[in-house]
Image 1: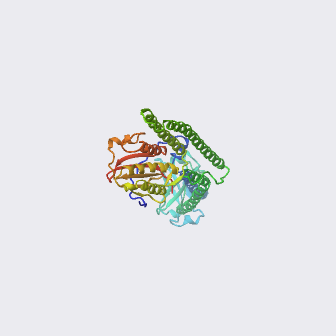
Image 2 (image 1 turned 180 degrees about the vertical axis):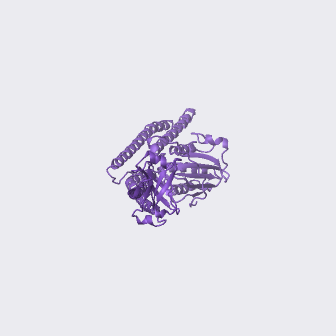
Image 3 (image 1 turned 135 degrees about the horizontal axis):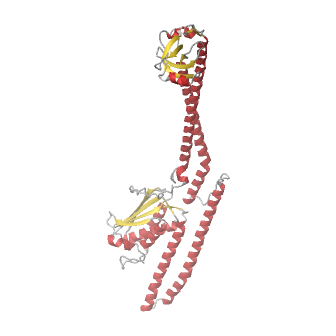
Length: 488
């Protein structure tokens, strides 16, 4: 007999998740089962991102509009100065003297003005211009004369390219001068490179500041969500400890919003425990009520010979076995249904049973070899695990030649697999389903009631597990059990 770690990796089984329902919760926070913390943080981060992007665009646009408005005011002043400096000659020609604006006196200085008149073809013919333009003219859109005519006396601004290729902001206004029948168009333009650079610089600083602000807000949201939901996480951990058998109730004190939930959980746990105790009491009373008449019947039959006494004794023992079987199953179902099982170390139970059954089958020379991790624990009561393992190992020892091998290990989170094998004759595949049925005996000459594997299967199913029979590489029968495992 030996005890050690798991001897082989068990194949993992696929699990199916039931489809989640849709509704208000699902539309806002996704499928049930997803992390609420992650959803809240992502949702808040998305809103923060949208708000910051909109804020950045609005601030940049407002700054640019303000800068262009300042340029527009400067150009309007230049146009007003040009209007004042313009006079009409006796023959009707418009003559503009140089205005007192130093940049307009320097060639290609970046600030310009021009006076033009509309032509019959819908264009514009320059009449006079600033010294800064040299022999060039300010570029105007083709539809500008029409627009100026519709907005007579008002100023229209647009972007253009200057004589040296620089970006310009140009303002134009159509005026009617005394002594001249045909209107005159006044232009003023200025290099907007500085304004564009200032706008880009402002946008860079603004986006950098908003980025830092966004990072701070997301961090604050993360901290707030984590801190705000921390009591719920703690309550979840405590309930998990109760389910795993590490605690009997929720002990911690929580904020006033969550404390009623913790109290309701404790009331539910107390109610479940009362229900289990009540069921155990009823089962015990039923056992006494049934076993006493059966014992009387068995005593009355005595040791008398004859067909009737033998029949009474035989049927009475069958009835006792059946009563024990159903009472055992009811107790296990009552315990397993509430999911508040104890933590039962698997290694300890296997070691106790191996020692005991090796002594029972000492004359046969049975060797029981078991392997299980030290931290592997069954999520259920010790007496149920003892009954499951006891029936399995006893059945294997009864049918083996000499060797019984047991291995146990975790297959999935919250689930373990136990494999019991022997080197006996095995069991034909067509008889395996019958072997798990109550009262079925594969060999009438072998002592027993035929309830061993049935009891194992019933208890396993009561805990939500499964029993499977297969061929062992040792030559005999292999029995695989899937049982709930307690978390380490």
